[in-house]
Picture 1: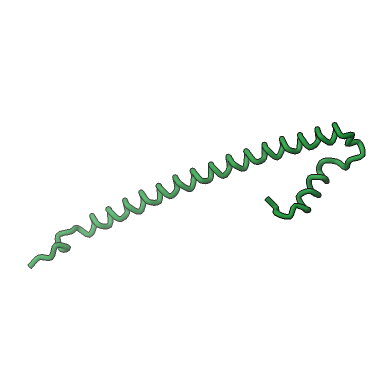
Picture 2: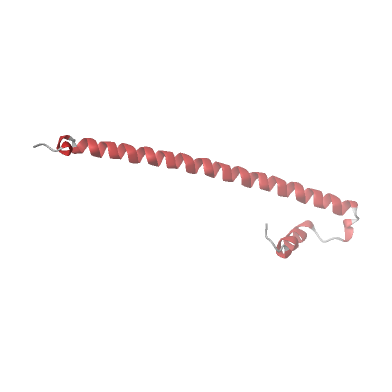
Length: 87
């Protein structure tokens, strides 16, 4: 009697498994690259928004007579440290 598994070439099984694993790894790499690109884009967008916010704050301080105000960098550091939520 011949079992159905006896007719399968072990080299073919190994080749199929290697192809499957390689394909799976390529898909994972593609997904990680897509996520990484998305994260970098969002960080860049946040940086632009922070720059715009800092510019607006400085303009408001100038309009309100901000000659007596501390420089913008310590103000930003002070605001960050006093922020209760952190976000």
